[in-house]
Length: 368
Image 1 (cartoon, rainbow, N blue to C red):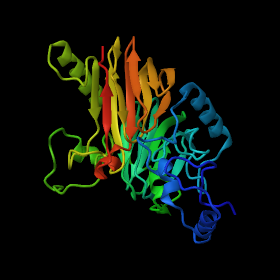
Image 2 (image 1 turned 180 degrees about the horizontal axis):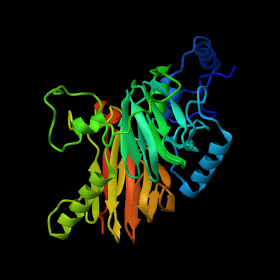
Image 3 (image 1 turned 135 degrees about the vertical axis):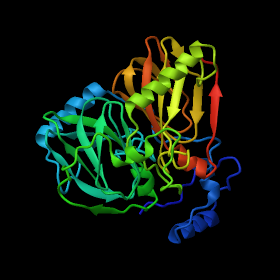
């Protein structure tokens, strides 16, 4: 078995000189499964975060045809549970993780098809970049899914999906699977094979209670760790972003930086993040806008909802267009720019780092 103790081949600064007695000590460490800090400190305590994940972009025009092919070849049901294709970051050794804490996947459902009911401790959401016709049913509450809708779902709630339409539909799933996997905190349970499709309401029960800005039902006054609202509709997101930019044009300082409007999806019972481990936002850049360079502890993923823009993450630069997804690893500098206008959905792991008081960020330069 290889030794868990890694010793430099040459004597480095402040490292002990190799002697027979030191070699014998190291063999004793190996036998007792011990590792001396003085040989590891450079890896364990670097001067700044050294991300294992790499900046990477996945093209929607490549993902969607492959999901369509999976729809023809791969059944959905017990065992596979979901026809979901995970984005595997090239820096994470082939694991199906988009960053060390986040999962992102394209899920595909054929016409009149069910994805069976289950529940898990992982917090999850769905974001729809195109299409409609699928309903997600959470604890018996049917919720319609349409382009631009953000649909969060806290862990340990029963949920299944049903495509009511005569056409297929694809969307993006986001979960904290890697975080819970590494923390050995995961539970999973099967539910019914079939999704209850008897109801087709204009509004889900969660929306009827919680989708009224600034108003909270007195029958539900206690804060909840995750949002009870199961659908944040595109028309509200779009209007909020448009009004921010309109106020800027009128001379009010309403935007994040010139030409850059943004909103955060929040839990109406607390005003905090929608999920305990995931932050979700939507950003709009007006034509001719570029952002400041920014670094953040923690990772995030963007999906282009509409428009085209130039994206720089670390040493990588891409032209991103509708549907494309890209990963921003921890402490990697990133900027966004567009000549024609750009809408982006973003999710990240910031709540984890903020609760641990490990969050840190840095802005450099100025927007134009």
